[in-house]
Image: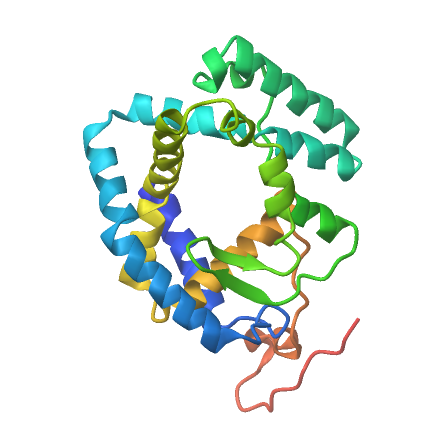
Amino acid sequence: MNSRRLIPVLALLLTLSACATAENNYDPIEPVNRVTDKVNDTIDRVTLKPAAKGYSAVVPKPMRTAVTNFFDNATYLNTVLNDFLQGKGGQGFSDLSRFLINTTLGAGGFVDVASTMGLERHEEDFGQTLAIWGSDQGAYIIYPLLGPNSVRNTPDFVTATATDALFWASFVLAPQVTIPITVLKYVDKRANLLEASDMRDDLALDPYVFTREAWRQHREYKIYDGNPPPKKQSIDDGWQEDDWGPGEEAEPQAEP
């Protein structure tokens, strides 16, 4: 990421972690979540993170990109399914075409041929579908080993697994093949998050809150396809410092 773009992103996330809204702050099992987060973080620091750093150091960037493309394509039918469940028929057929093209012309998904043909990549899941259907987000949950989630987003595990090509391949391929592939999948995923986790550790006053608010904002961004509605302004937003004359008593602006 460009360093100039990185600064405002970090500032935004740090602000969110410091002043979360009451709606986003719904975390009724926070004590349990914090313990789970601490355990997950400890396991990560002695297993996945070192493996991801070694993977990033040894494997050239083009090869890592190809691996990421492969795993993204293998799970892309989840996006296709939820396109249609959300009533996005045109996007659904576009994403189905993307999957078929990358699977065939893209050597099983290692090469993202579809993007060069103008077929944009989307990210849809059952959690977003439930949000569009009107389901509340529910409590924030940190699952052992799996990390941040919410009550509403939890059922996506079922649809994501059912549409994962590698899950079905595991029934016909030997464990000697599927186990290394699964390990590579999680190492590659962790490698793609190294920069984000390092920034959190270096800059966040409370890594737990930082992660929670960043995760929620990311989910909202995805639910609204990158265009979330503006937040409701507080009463303080009606005050304009420039309207206060010298020696005058400040008065709030009248609401429109």
